[in-house]
Image 1 (tube, rainbow, N blue to C red):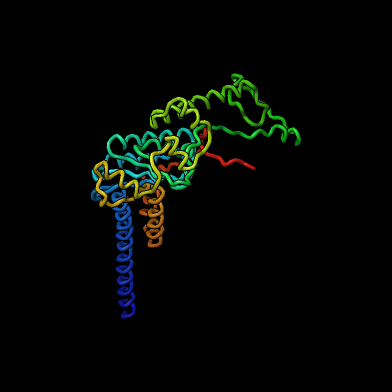
Image 2: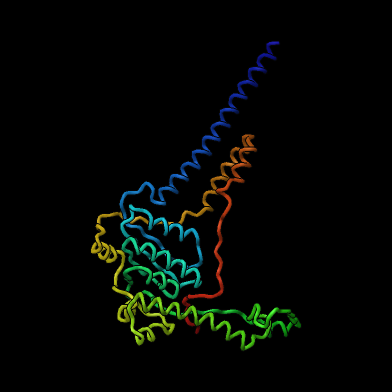
Length: 322
């Protein structure tokens, strides 16, 4: 019987240890989620003192709801005294550039905003720049490329070579044209040109209004070319040559103290929290709490990850091919 008593005691001790580690795992998971929530709230400016916000517009511009929400939060944050838009982008989609432009303009209606062109602000990148109140660029930065383009491959000859013919039944002749796998009709090209022309006129109107150009000045600036920073300044496409220090000086002239810290804002991607959920779920699974693990996996935090895609109509700078 002493052996039986020892076995019972051992099992009780083991059960207590297992319970302890299960509770510890739950506490660690909750602490991890709370920490992520704290940093997310801090990135949204909830715990910040007065400062200057910096956002980065880099790479290809697409419709990104996370970025728009971040900029909207900056506009509503009373601790943000001004905003610096750091740009290094060749452009992107027309719709994405328009959404970014409108979001920056909403902030500019409440706080002084200044763009700093680091490397490139072409096409859609330039649309983001003219949304601010003041544009500063490096002497050698690429700026401008005011225009719209749509491209599609046409593989009709390739299909003919391999003996493939694509048939289509359309409700109207212009439905889903041009397709790239059938000969493109003049009517389809004309319809597509109308869309490009409308978007181009919208782009020109923004530039003319925001930069105060005459019709003759706009005609020269909006022929699709990209310009160096110095040339862009001479053409009134930008305001000054310099970098972030010059941007701080400009903000200081609008009542934003130079001693305020600049804090870079980045979109609070929903994709970062599911990683924490997955790690916590795996940990509690290992400790036998599969029900809690499943709840972590299926929580609303994991759902709703948004993906951006090109919409086909682009305001993007493309270097000439040799």
